[in-house]
Every structure is written in C-alpha cells, then in structure tokens.
Amino acid sequence: MEHFTSIKQLGSLHEAMEAAKYVKEHPFADQELGHNRTLLMVFFNNSLRTRLSTQKAAMNLGMNVIVLDVNQGAWKLETERGVVMDGDKSEHLLEAIPVMGCYCDIIGVRSFAGLTDRERDYGEEVLNQFIRYSGKPVFSMEAATRHPLQTYADIITIEEHRTKARPKVVMTWAPHPKALPQAVPNSFAEGMEFAGYDFVIANPEGYDLPKEFTGNAVVTHDQDEALRGADFVYAKNWSVPDGPDYGKVLCRDRSWTVTAEKMALTDNAFFMHCLPVRRNMIVSDEVIEGPRSLVIPEAANRVVSAQAVLKQLLERD
Ligand code: SN0
Image (cartoon, rainbow, N blue to C red):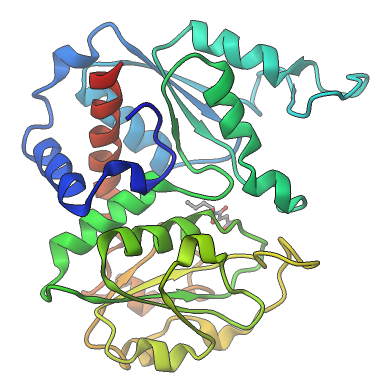
C-alpha cells in the first residue's frame, strides 16, 4: 500500500481483520519498524479522536510525531493554482507540501469538504496535491469524500460484536444544526460493501449519497422500515450530496433523531456513531448511554485502525 485514502485499499475483509487482530494482540511488537521515522499530521480542520489515536498508534510503532494545525500559527495557505496572491494568504500549498515532505517519512492529512464547490470536493484536490507533491506516503485522516480510518475502526467494531454471519447494518441520516460533509457516510457505505454485510441506508428525500459509494446498498426514505430487524444502527448527519443545493441543510426534521422508541423497532441493535455527536439531535441521551451503545469501543478501535495502516505504510516505505 503506497497511500491510504480508501478502505478498499486494505484488500479484503479477511486481510483487514488479520492486520487489526495482529496490532491488537501485539501493540508494541514493531517498535523497531518506526524507530527514527517521523509522522507528520497536518490538520486543516478540528480533531479529537483522529489526532490522539493516530499519535498513539505512531508511538506504539516507535515513531516520532509532529502535528501541524494549519489554522493555528502556520502561514495562511492558498490552495488554488493561478491565483494572484494579493490577499491574506501568505504561502501556496504547492511550496508548503514539498517542504513538509522534507521533514517527515509519512504524512497524514485532514482536509474536509468545503461544501461550496462539489467538483473540487469530489476531486479531492487537497489530498491529491499531498500525494503528488510531498514525495512521501500519504494517508487520509478524513478528506473531502472519505474517512477511511473511521470506517476501518467501524468494521473492526462490527466484527467484534456481530452474532450473525451477515448482520443487517442500517445507516440512518439524523438531524444536525450545521452543514456537514458526506465523507463519513460515503466511506461507511463503501466499507459495508467491502465487508459484505446486509446494508440499508435511510435518509430524507434529496439526501441520497452518490452511487459510486453506496454501490448495491438498499436506499429508503422510510426510517422506520429500514430499522426493522437491524443488528447495528449507524447514525450520521450529512448535507445535500449533489445538485443546486449541494452542501446545504434542507431537512431539519427531528423525527429522524435516534431514540429508544426507534431502537425498539430493531433486533436489539447496537448503536454506533463516529463522534463527535450532538445529543438529542442525532441520538437521545438514553440510547447513547445505554448498554447497546458502541461509541466508546468504536473510538478505542481508532488506535487499532491507525496502527494497522501506519504499519503497512512503514513496511512498504
Ligand atoms: C465531522 C464530519 O465529517 O461530520 C467530523 C466527523 C468525524 N463532524 C463535524 O464537523 C461535527 C461538527 C459539529 O459541530 O457537530
């Protein structure tokens, strides 16, 4: 694996799970692999889990870690080529990226969708520039269209809790006050096809995710129907994925909030969310605090997914 930007690059569910199990059983066995090698994590957006879990994963592998919060103390970066730089942006990404590449062996990048220009977001321009110009292995820490380390942790968590060979997993849209990217739900949908589960997506009309990510998933606009018989409920908000309202909030319907009443429609399903979560918008207090909530094990598995990926990037480097 040269770069890591999508769950599909892990090969098969079996290979992904073998790699995760190895890391879980032997967290400190590969300290030599990372010795004197440096991870640079570049954040264009906020983070709690990704930052801490990826740093922990790198430390488990014996690596040195540098973190750059681009919006806190770095020069303001221009990302578009051809712009006359007479505004507030002091440096171009086209210089900044190769410079960053000089100071590390692996680069992790977080760069969310801007949600104004769909073509630019779905072209993954920032992530691809890092791949093209850094000269180093690059991995996504949530880019414009995918969050593969989250998806990997989600799959590990489902594998650890499933009791059926092929569980029914339902991803449901839920309301949120802000416009959020489609990266997490796109990536999760891609992951469910990769894992081969029975996968259903429920969302309001106008919110259907792109086919290139949802593949053969069943898509319905009826949340109650989707939830019937579910083994796992994965809640997430996203903004309008395409068309003239791209990146906007069109639906604020609180009847989509995942409550105990909604969970009662399922087959005693587990509840999942990538976090951070808005309580009583996305999910009620009692569901997220309840015995079937997996949000903390999911977050714990972020170290495992990051370590399994970093290990493969180090081995190939
Ligand atoms: C991000 C998203 O892609 O939905 C990151 C999730 C891992 N979430 C947010 O930006 C939530 C922000 C908020 O104010 O609730």
